[in-house]
Image (tube, rainbow, N blue to C red; front, side):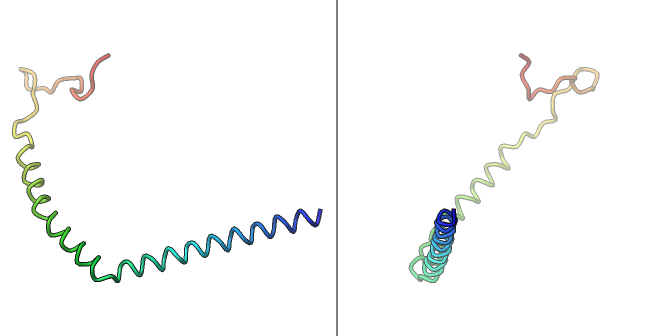
Length: 88
């Protein structure tokens, strides 16, 4: 039984070491990528290109909002059932 415990412990240590090494490498690459001036320039240009599109979408959403009140029955009381759900 000591051989099995040793094998499991060794396997767990290797898995933990591999996970730590992978995490460290990911942090290293992310830091390297973020400090790259070409990447920063590209992201800035992309953000500037997206800005007018986002503003146009915001204006479009404002224009598409309903301006009327929801329909009401002749007595001025709202309908009993919800109009969002279909009756089966």
